[in-house]
Length: 134
Image (cartoon, rainbow, N blue to C red; front, top):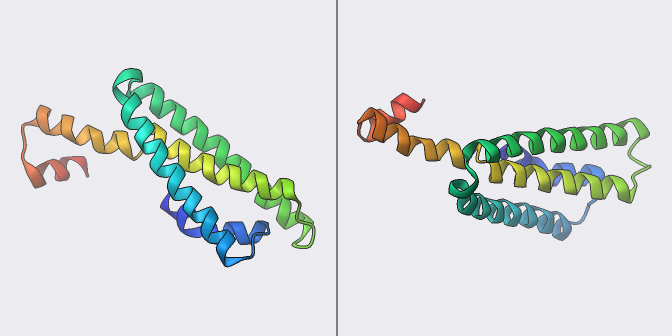
């Protein structure tokens, strides 16, 4: 997920966002969405459960990756000259929904939350818990 965040300026440049301030604004939007959905996942984790959030996350990530890949492929096939606002909107939406899906489903959050349960169940301390998880 960090690769999409790190390469987002290049992705946005490919779809037609050329100004530095616009690329920075899009990157800030990614960070805001990621933070917002981590907070949402934190509140819903105990209410909804890990499995529904994880399945929602994976499904959303698959759809987002497919939308982003198909948009970038369509731009490559048409050429750099024929960029449309639909491509721009779809790619930005795909990147933002990808970050939201990753953050809400907890491929980040749930995975790190499981360490606490492993520690309790395994009755290990500190670095040993990390060795078990890795």
